Amino acid sequence: MLRRFCLLLPLFILTSCLTDYEVDTPLQLVVEGWIDSGDFPVVIVTTTVPVTEERQELDELGQYILRWARVAISDGEEEVVLTGKLDRRYFPPYVYTTSRLRGKPGGRYHLTVDYKDFHAEAETTIPQPVPLDSLRVSRCHDSDTLYQVHAFFHDDLAERRYYKFFTCMGRRSRMFFSSYMQTLSNEVFAPGEEVEANVYKGRLVTERDTYVPYFKETDTLLVKFASMDSLSFRFWEQMERNMTLGNFPMTSVKKNPQTNIRGGLGYWCGYGAMVYPIVIADSIRRP
Image 1 (cartoon, helix red, strand yellow):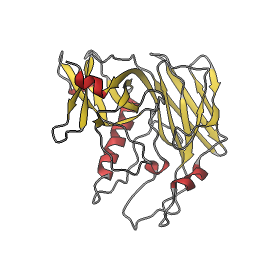
Image 2: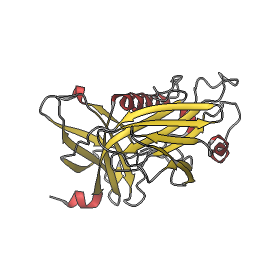
Image 3: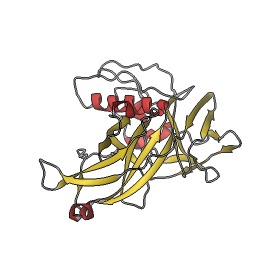
Image 4: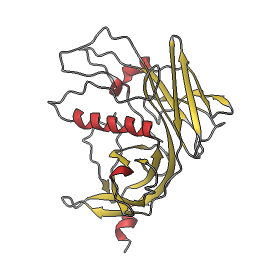
């Protein structure tokens, strides 16, 4: 999960005021990868996009996709080399994956990426999944046509835990996108309480319509509730902060999200994931 949430290339560009460009900044490797418990890994490999005064269309960004990289994952016992393939469900539409390796709770996964002079490494773990107690739907206070999804769960406060929500519209694509501003740490939970968290619609960055985080009565979706390690949490926490600041025209975002990629930018995240289907109309009618 962008399972997926896919970060676009421009999100990893160092941005500044409109007239402040770093035109001579060398290209950097960008790695976007994840592995869910019970699922296969997905890795996207690109480079940063130079910041210029000339507008670049999305179709022109294909030149920054690295299609012939060597991408490998080791689980401590075996190293598996991933296969690159075109997959238009993602943006960029080229991924590295394999059916020879599934994520397991408690597993540790070492990623290496090599392309010409680029070399990057990262390591992630998959925590034990934590189940949701329930998902509920309520009508938004200021709308007669939009609905809010609420998730409820109990947390084991005996150890530090980190969570994130992802959503997938429909049930067939299995394309999960990051639920906006829903990266959580149990350090803010009260002992023994049932935790309530709002689940917002994910957004593909290529969408041109105004983003609405809520759901319609006709929507059918999957909600993925993912446990993650502290490095993954820090990446998503910083990414969400940057995305929020980027929505304010007078605010400049000059700092890339904290990365766990050595030799590049991006993220390599393991998720202890549990997926739940929800039909908005059925949930509304349920007593």
